[in-house]
Image 1 (spheres, rainbow, N blue to C red):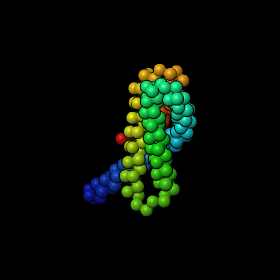
Image 2: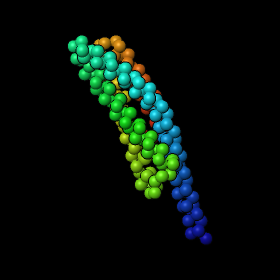
Image 3: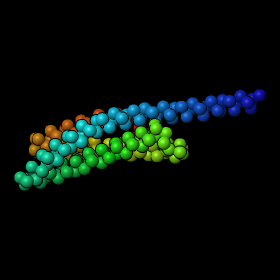
Image 4: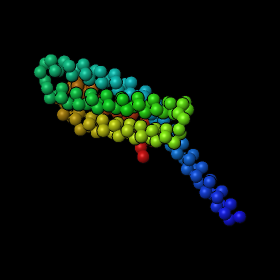
Length: 160
C-alpha cells in the first residue's frame, strides 16, 4: 500500500511539474505576441533612424553614423529573433510538430535566443545613445531604446 501511495504521489508531482512548465511556456508565448506587435513599431523607428543616418553620411558626419549603424544592426537582429520565436511558437500552438519533446527544446532555445538578443540590443542602446551628437538621431535612438525596453519587459517570462 505504501508503494502505491508513493507512486501516486510521484506521478502527481510529475504532473504538477509538467503543468508548471506548460504554464511558463504559455505565458512566454503571450509575451512574444506582445513583442511581435512592438517589433513593428521598432522597425518603423529603425527605418527613420536609417534615413537620418543617410543624411548625416552625405553631410560627412561619420561618428554619429557609425554609432547609428551599430544600433540599427542591433534592431535588425532583434526583429529577426522576435520573428523566429513567433514562428516557432505559432507552429507549436498549431500542433504541427510530431515530436513534442524536441519541439519543447526548440521553443526553449528560441525563447532564450530572443531574450539574450533583446538584452544585448537594449544594452547597446543604453551605452551608445548618449554619444550621438545629432539631436534627430539621438531622438530616434531614444525612441528605439524605449521600444526595446517594452519588448524586454513583455518577454521576461521567457528568461530561464
